[in-house]
Amino acid sequence: MIRLRLYTVLIAAIAFGSTACSWDFNNPSADEWDVQIVGDSVFDLSGDIRTVLKNLSGKGYKDRSVSGAKIQAIDNQLARAERRSSLKTVIANGGANDILQGSADCDSDPLTQGCLNVLDYIGDKGANMINDMYNGPSDDHVWLGYYNVKGSEAEKNEAIDYAYDNIYPDLFDLSGAGGSTFSGSVPGYGVYNGSSLGAFQVALADPRSSIVASDIKSDDIHPTYSGSSKLANLIWGVLTQRSMYR
Image (tube, rainbow, N blue to C red; front, side, top):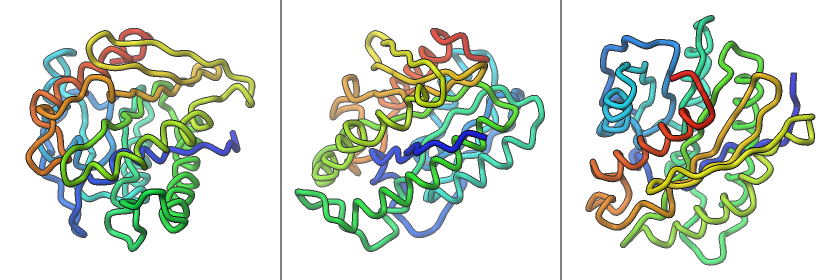
């Protein structure tokens, strides 16, 4: 079992799913259970990412994402997915709602110690998730990073960029455990980086370069259809370029 200090914060989602309740708004019938989606409302609220991925792949992936889900709930989604012995690929995000539904202030500049403490907690939970993935049946993993939000929510972009600069480099570098790193780009949709260790591989998809204001809804947070389409195409690009099961 790998014990690595891996931070699956994905905190750029700090504004996704802002209510205290959790709701599964999209639970379509799946015809492909060997690829599963876990996460929060960036996937679940509209279901558009899953729909575009179905158009690209010809397969309806199992979507376990729930709007408002905290990192522990997403870990539980992952645990249910990993019970499938034939599971090959996991597409994930998470960490947002631990901040939204807590008392930490992540809107201030600079980030408060309380916000950093929550990030540290999410990182610990994320490390457990990566360990579970490594020890489970799935080999291929794409973590969807988040874009900069806009308008009334723009102050959260400092936390988003902090995660990319200070947390993700350790999260997706398995070289200390004997793995190798990789990186690439999906023209028009973003870049990615990650690591492989034997058959296991995990990649962070970074869409910040492609998501613009018109790709974000009037709530200043969630993706419009155009934004979801870009996110889905970025995920698809990672899956195809890294020869991940899809």
